[in-house]
Amino acid sequence: MAEIIQRDGTWTFDGDTVRIVPGGKAHPVRQELGEIAVPLEAVAGVSFEPDRKGGRLRLRLRGGACPVLRAADGRLKDGADPYVLTVEKDRTGVAEYFVDEVRNALLIEQVPDTPVDRFLLPGPTLPVSGGGGDGTASFDGESVRLTWNWKAEESKTAGGASTFPLSRIAAVRWLPAIGLENGFLRFEPVEGPVSAPPKYDPYALDLWGMSKKEHTAVLVAAAVLMRLPGARAALDAPQGPQPLAKAAEPAAAPAGDHDALLRRLRELGELHKAGVLTDEEFSTAKQAVLRSM
Image 1 (tube, rainbow, N blue to C red):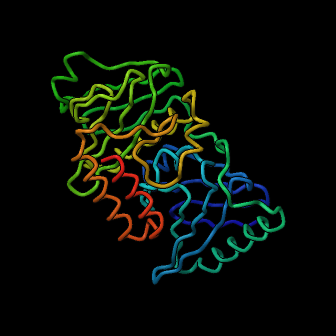
Image 2: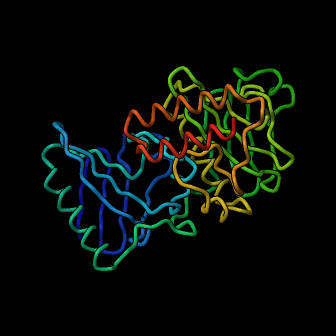
């Protein structure tokens, strides 16, 4: 068995499963998600990325295997990513051994690195809650509840907390705050998207990026996404940044929502510049946004 214990967490591999336990000071997303048992069939690859302070151990999953990664859609920073482990300088040799053990098992079992047609991990434990900004979202497997705080707009607080069953949700999208742009956790009702900005939308949380805790909204998005009636269709959609993580083919953005599309183009440019998107992925995503315009 291979094992690496760090302040950031502990990873073990017994030949069949990579078990991930977050450290005591790990990012709130990883803390709330808790221990993860990743079956070998869900693993596409593993690598160790050295740097002057040690490096990072990174587990790459097959597309569509993890509902959290699907909901995050490539927007989780390394600190919040449960499949990234910070490795101290005196443990780089152990990290390299861990990589060799997992790679050998993948080779022996001939596990493909292609996308899967179903979730291979269970996702967040229910009930789950998260968020921040102007409120908190919770989900018990049947209904979503949005509870507003004193910072929310009157258009939201006047009606009290919003509660709606899963059957009324057509799609869910999570976007973290990026730079000066607020993020959101947004649920699209079956009757169609609300045209108002997230701060006025009773089906959305407005996320301001004031604390790491806000990122836990992605766990609510993941729990809802994997239980939508058409979740299978969501896995068939292209991987990487998409306009909407939803249970059917993504709908085009409203004709008048050009500001949002322009922000999306800027975001894609930032991801490309940071190396998150390859040239090909950036070109494909950019063309998709341009077609929506």
